[in-house]
Structures are given as structure tokens and as C-alpha cells.
Length: 462
Ligand code: ATP
Ligand code: MG
Image 1 (cartoon, rainbow, N blue to C red):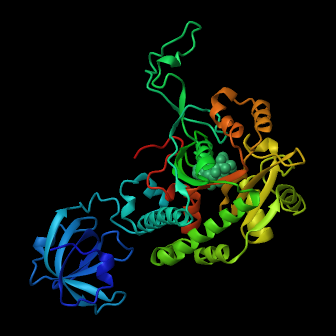
Image 2: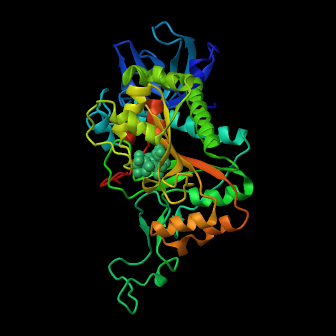
């Protein structure tokens, strides 16, 4: 007999048919005559109720069917008499795959804190919360590919190990196969990287953008979707050391096209979640954040407010609000500033553009004023920055000047510079942090709770 998923079972009307269902026991309760087992297989947030007539299946034979155990049940589909479900199954036989000692199973009871669940990341996918988050995360990954594929973008796999330390987005993790206890030295006494795996120092990538640009200047419209790594010691609820990033890059796009693409993309993803994940979103809305669904609709139903950095700074300075960090033209905005603009001032998502050149990366296109660059950050309620992007500098001389001014190793970027020598063109792109998107869509408060196995300072257990 083929296994049927709980999701399909719950909407089935094939009453009296015998089916095979497998999953993990959430609870077992009952009395001398009957046992009720709530079974979940992760296909949907809801459980199927298995009714066990103890005059047919002996109580002793199911004594090890306890919370957390894995079982296979053959039974008959019936319409449910109980409240809260329309379908249940009457068990004919139950096979125990793996027991789960009630004395030691950590998820014996409901209502554990998210902090506790982080310590048992190997088991937390079995909770309703993480089941919901992981299903939504999957749906969003699929929607990312669907959005770009439907628009004719080409998915490019950019390298994870990079020979450049000048990607311009953050501190890097070094990759080496040298024996750290016996480092080879050159004649000057420095580490001899000629003996390292790649014959030079290498790092984990902080962004696929630079390589993405190379592809865009041949295929016109591309995106990347892969892991990125940042060795920044920022222990916040919005930063991971390993996170996934989506980076579209489009030839012939200027900043305004880039903003339009970012806004359309984010609205598409949120609408996709509203359409395809209603049960999981309803659960999260109920359990964690009663304004979640409203906030999602706020984003899809409003045009994003587009303002310059300079205007944004003026608004913040004139707000009369006491910020922890002072706002001054020329400094990077903190998340408290970004959130003030979004949540208090405009009350909708904001796209800030034209940032001072000194707080942005070398590759951003200079504006005519010589002081600001064509950067754009998309700011969201509850999150702050969710997207960072820009129109890229396409003029060889200007780009080289910026690289020199910012003391970046020009020799490591010769290949990047060559695209401005041969057939250069206006182009633009952005990076969406996948986990920040999932934070927003699930309404979870901590980025550690939207990735199965978070990598943060001092934490790489699982
Ligand atoms: P922040 O100022 O929040 O540190 P950033 O300016 O360093 O962000 P970018 O380099 O522009 O970010 O990266 C693009 C996107 O990647 C960001 O808008 C954000 O969504 C995401 N992102 C950046 N750093 C992290 C991180 N450490 N963990 C998770 N997502 C991140
Ligand atoms: Mg950063």
C-alpha cells in the first residue's frame, strides 16, 4: 500500500477507504476503551487524528507509541465526529518505527521558548513553529526562482570560494588547506601562500555580485541565489555569519529600473506566501504576532516611498525623536533610524537612494554632485534594511579612481575592470538577504529562528 500524506488525507473524501499514513506522534490521549493519536508528517501544520479501538488493538501493543515516536498506521478514513477536524482514521494496525522515551524526549511538552529550541536545533523542525517556518522558507525559495524564470532571467552559480578580498561587503572567512600548526614561511618570514591549495590566499564569498555582473554583461538579465559568509561579530537579531542571498543584476537598467524591480519582486514574494502558505501564516499570526497578516498586506497594497538619503536625514533630524545613535549627514543609518522612517514617519516601506559615497562600496555609480552614489536600500517595518543595491559604475576611469581612493587591491579586480574596458554598459542590481525576507514574512523576531541551523559567533554546533 502506498503512503498517503497527512495533507492529502485531511482533504480526502474517500471515506471507508483503507490507507497507510506515517509520521511522528504529537500527543496520545484517551481512556480504557479508546486512544487518540495526533500524528504529523510535516506535509501540513495540522495533525491527523488516529482513533484506536483498544478492543481491537491492545493497549499493551501501543504502549511505546508516545510523544515523539515514529509510527506507520494502516486504517480506514472516516468523517470525524470530533471538533476541529473533518477527517480521521480508524486504526487497523500500528507499526512502531522508533520509540521516544517520555523521560528524556526534550519536546515532551508544548510551549518551549524559542531560546530553548535553538539549543535543540536537531529536533526543533518537529515543532509546529519550525514546521511552519521551514515550509514557508521552501515556498519562498521556489517563488524566487519562479519570479525570475518567468521574467527570462538566467540563474547563475557564482563561486563560494573567492580569490578576492575586495568584494566590498564585509569581513571574510579565510579558506586554507595549510596546517595552521606548521605554516610554511617564505624567505621574508611571511606565510607562503604559494603552498596553499590555490597558490594564493582565498576566502568565502560575501556576495556573488561581482561575478554576477560579469554574467549580466553577456546574458543581460541574471540572478544568483546562494550562501554568503560574513565574519562580522555583530550579534544582532538580523545578522548571521552564513546567510543566503538573492542578487539579480540587469544590463541596461538604471537606478529607477532597479527600484521598480525590487518593489515588484518583494510584492510578488509576499503575495505568493499569502496565497500558498495560508495555514502556516495563520498559525504564526495567532501564536507570535497578531499584526503579521496586516503588515504583509500593508506592503503589497502600498507603493514604496522613494526618498533620498539627504531627505531622510533631514526628516530624522527634525523628528524630535531621541535616537541612541546621532544622525549626521555622511554617517550610515542605524536600524533604529531606518525603522523610524518606515514605521513612524511614512508608515510604509521606504526606498532610500543617493547615499554619500564614503559609506558605500566602490562599485556604485557616482552622481553628478560628486558626493553621492546611486545606491538604494529598501527598508521594511520591523526589519530595517532588507535589500541593498545600486546602479554600478560603468566608466572605467571613474571606477579605477574609486578603487584607488579606497585602497582596494586593484590587481585582484583586473577581471572586473575589464568589463568596463570591453563593451561596458549601464547596469544595476541588488541583494536581498533571504533570511531577512523570511523574518518579515513569518513575523519571527530573531534571524536565528528562520534558518534551520544558524551560524553566529560562537555557535556552529549542529
Ligand atoms: P547591514 O547594514 O544590515 O549589515 P549590509 O549593508 O551589510 O546590511 P549588504 O552588503 O547590502 O548589507 O547585503 C545585502 C543584503 O543582505 C542586506 O540588505 C540584508 O538583507 C542581507 N544581509 C547583509 N548582511 C547580513 C547578515 N550578516 N545576515 C543576514 N542577512 C544579511
Ligand atoms: Mg553589514
